[in-house]
Length: 394
Image (tube, rainbow, N blue to C red):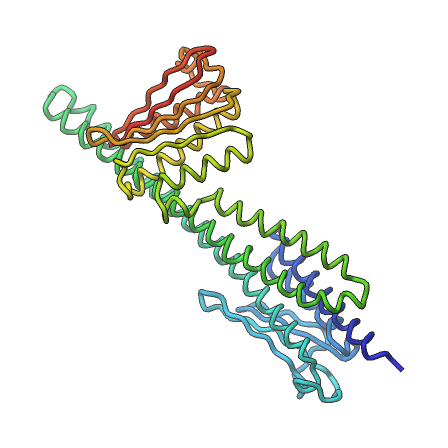
C-alpha cells in the first residue's frame, strides 16, 4: 500500500519539476515559440497524477501543439491566459479514461494551481515576445524619422550654401538650421529616454514579477520539501531567484532610473553619486543650489544626467581620483553644473584629436549634445592638478 504522505510529496516534486523545466524553456530566447511550446507540452503529462493516461494541448493564436494521443474527453482541465494586446491562449490537460473524483473532477487542487501557474508563465513569455517586437518596430520608426530629418537637414544646408552670398538671407537660414538641430536633438534625446523607460518597465513588470511569482510558489512548496529531502535544493533555488530579482531591479535603475522622472535631477544626481561610491569606492559629494527649479525641462534633465554619468565613468576609468564634487546652480537664466575631481588631470591639447582610450570621445559627445541645446562645456585641467568640467544649458 502506498504511503499517502509519500504520494503527496511525489506529486509535489513532479509539479515543481514541471515549473522548473518550464522556466528553463521560456528563458531561451534563441528558439522559436513553436519549438518552445512543442517541448513544453511534453512536460505536462508527467506532472499530473496519472501520467500514463494524460494528454495535453497548448494553443496561442494560430499556434497549436499537442501530445500524440490528445482528444476531447469528459475529464478535462483548462488554464487560460491573455496578453495585454488581447491575444489569447489555453493549456488543456485530459485523462483518456475516468479516474476517481477529486477536488476538480478527477484533478487535484494542486493540479489546478499548477496549470494556472503555467498559464501565467506562458502569458509573461508571449507578452515579452510581443513587447520586444513593439520595441523593434519603435526603433525602426525612429531610424526612419532620423533619416528623414537628416535628409531635411542636408537639404537646408544646400539652400544655405546657395544663398551664402546674401548675408541677411544666409543668416536667416543659419538660424533656421540651428533651431531645427536643437529640435531634432531634443526629440532624439526624449525618444531615447522614452525607449529606455519602456525597456526598464518591461524588465520590471514581466521578468521581475515573474521571478517574484516563482519565488512565492517555491516558498509555498518549501514545507513539503522538508519531508522529501529537497529543502536544501529549494533554499538554493530561492537564493538564486533572490539574486536574479536584485539584479533585475538594479538593471531597471541602470537602464532608466525612475528617480530622474519622479523626483527630479537633484535626487537623481544624489542616487548616481551613491551608486559610484558603492561600486567604485569613490567619494562623491553633491551640492545643489536652492535656486534650481523643482522641475527642469525633461530634455535638460536627461541631457545633464547622462552627461554627469559619462563624466563619472571617465573619472573612474582614467583620472585615478579618490574624490569628486558635483555642484549645480542657476545664474542669469542658465543652469550651470560642474564636476570636479582630484585625479591626475591631463593635457587639454590631447583632446584636439579624439582619443577614445582617454575619454576624449565622451567629452566630445557631451560638448556636441550641449551645443545642440544652445549650451556649452568648458574644461579646466592640467597634468597633476585634477579636472573641472562645467556644463551650461539655457
